Length: 130
Image (cartoon, rainbow, N blue to C red; front, side, top):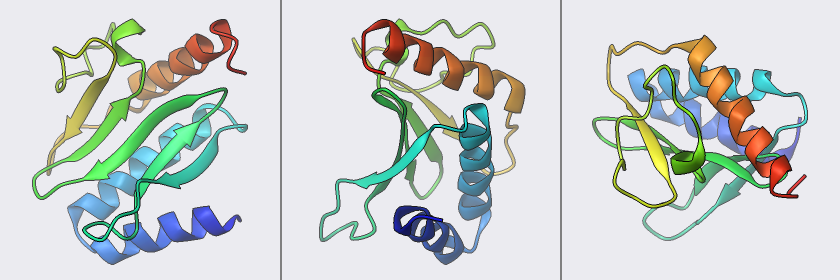
């Protein structure tokens, strides 16, 4: 296990509430979508010293941010991805990104999320990113 993966484990454990469980579940789904997905941590700052988990393969797939009332997955190129299951429910007016806000007790459609992650990977590869 990489140091980054350990840091993300620690971030999830430190949350110790529904947000940690949700981020952990989403992370498992993302990582299972392709064994070559790389975990990173970006955007460390004083207000968020543990940074933001990022999943990449041939370019950024998505980020996982934790807020008081939501766990947000932001897909770097979400506006270019098909979303037949209608997962995107946030940042819908942006020209590039799209996001999914997961709220306490809300459903997680593993099959649809896996398909979206794979589509993001295919998008990166088609753009010569991997």
